[in-house]
Figure 1 (tube, rainbow over the protein chains, first blue to last red):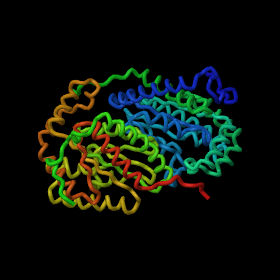
Figure 2 (cartoon, rainbow over the protein chains, first blue to last red):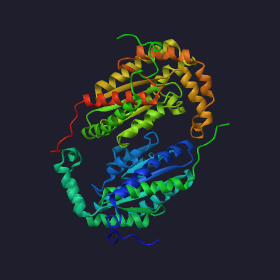
Figure 3 (cartoon, rainbow over the protein chains, first blue to last red):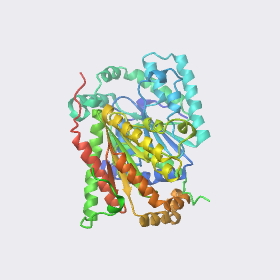
Figure 4 (spheres, rainbow over the protein chains, first blue to last red):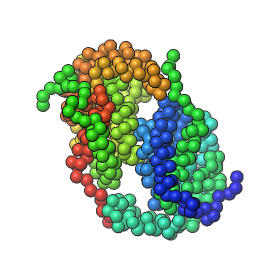
Amino acid sequence: MSKISLQKISTRAPKTLDKEQTRLKTASILRELNELQNLLYAESKHSLLIVMQGMDASGKDGVIRNVMTAMNPQGVTVKSFKVPTAEEAAHDFLWRVHAAVPAKGMIQVFNRSHYEDILVTRVHKWCTDEMAKKRMQAINAFEELLVTHNQTHILKFYLHISPQEQQQRLNERMQDRAKMWKYNEKDFEEAKLWKLYMKMYEECFNKCNFVPWTIVPSDQNWYKEYVIASAMHQLLLSLKMRYPGLKK
Amino acid sequence: MSKISLQKISTRAPKTLDKEQTRLKTASILRELNELQNLLYAESKHSLLIVMQGMDASGKDGVIRNVMTAMNPQGVTVKSFKVPTAEEAAHDFLWRVHAAVPAKGMIQVFNRSHYEDILVTRVHKWCTDEMAKKRMQAINAFEELLVTHNQTHILKFYLHISPQEQQQRLNERMQDRAKMWKYNEKDFEEAKLWKLYMKMYEECFNKCNFVPWTIVPSDQNWYKEYVIASAMHQLLLSLKMRYPGLKK
């Protein structure tokens, strides 16, 4: 597998791609996703775990709002990982994560994830390189457990935006009343650590790849949504699911 | 408050109501619900608990699929209450229910609920009348706790169908491949206990009414969805929510 280098990957859609055409395609994929999710739930043989990572304002919430909404909330749950509570911090770093993995038939979305334990923690030096290495091994083993022992399919998305796009979005949060609740002045401080974050992200992609990552160019929401919906669609189709017959 | 008698309430839409017109109205309400849910989440002052009860095949899953899907799954969670696990059964009947109530900013949907503990249990005589009376008191106190102490707004829906409609839907589950996974031969046995169920339901409505029930005529899905979406819409509007300003 060739190494992922974020600098070499565009944060924008291919120039030849038409925005309106793509939007129509996405809408049609979302309708099919709704059907496929129903089938996943009915068949209850597989489960799907979607890990979403990205810098502040990279559009994680937007994906949930515009892509995940296409499916039945009875079969789709979203877990947002925030600063660990006292109880969570008193356990190993995967404890709270394991508790949230999808049961058969379910789709679970992680808004941030166990990867924060080798991202923000490393940037701020709360986690040493040595500890990070051990965590990466633990993460690979954990993801392997889910894939091998419970038919869990994992999609890991990195929402790739440029630092300029991030600045613009953070500024918008100060001006648009409907976005102010997302504003956190600390985000601007974190943004200054951009390069260090990118370095740590690249290590995630290259070392925690028992399940490979998808780097999603995310400066334009319409393209980001298309890429993610397509990846889900392709994966679910590949499972060749069928509605079960009558129970005997 | 006048007593609810199910026999006196139609299971169908008012005859004067136009189906296509109503569907368009529902679609427009759902778009507004999406916005209102975002506001509820952003403001994080209130929460909404939706309790859905109804006989087998009364269309609870359909409400979740067609109404709740309108909203962001990050802010909407669905809990289906099934036969209690060993751990749940080792606690009081509200233990597992309390664990699932919505946090501020969230919408929680109960697909079945604590009411089963005074419905199916009474029909099968696993719960005496005396015990049921105590449970009803506990339920009223519990709902009052949520309303009074955490700004939780509760909507309780009974999906009202006719026994004929139920038979037809149960039969469909045997014939339509996409519905077979829902088929359970026990449902036909339960259906024979219709009158007893209605009696127990009426007691719920008339005795557990610290929060009043909405009886939803549900033989036609388009009307059921309209009534439920409208009730949610009206409630959320009444909260007069606003996007919060910048944190100081």
